[in-house]
Length: 209
Image 1: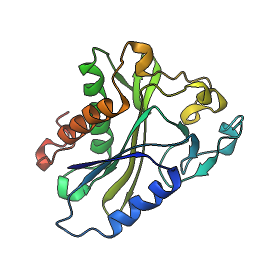
Image 2: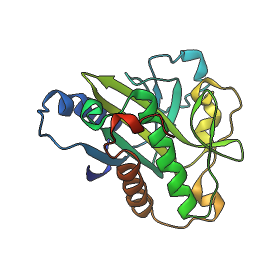
Image 3: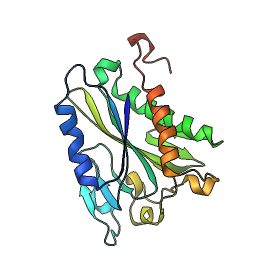
Image 4: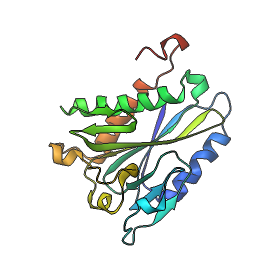
């Protein structure tokens, strides 16, 4: 899986580029991880309800085509967009989500932090606070969108929404848990974990974990 560090880019051009990449694929096109940060933006998934945006406060709100509800993106988030051919890699959607969660948990573990899943609430949590959000779209057997891990992002905008549709859901970030690595360093660790956790697997292994 090829990792590309794109730096700070506007949300909408990055979003539009992902399905274009997948539509241009052929059987030999390598899978890619796009590592980015975005200027402040709220995004509404396909299930998103506008009433979960309590007070945008001047931050743009973009209705997008990923799954899930509303979330916030901003500088200081390690975002990894996962452009993966699921059929070629022997992965189903549930295995993809679980693999991404596992990659975040592994990354946190490298920093001595215990991350956890929560039943029915995709993402990764530390002490019941959400530290990483996952939103995906699958089209023609390929994924796009991905995961956003809070590194040293301003968490105040999360109070302007019901994160992922849950009123009062707390947010966490690595900076408050003693991590001082740069956003780039965290992204590189996350990319390595994603490449490992999403490596192609024989069909018999899909449900082993």
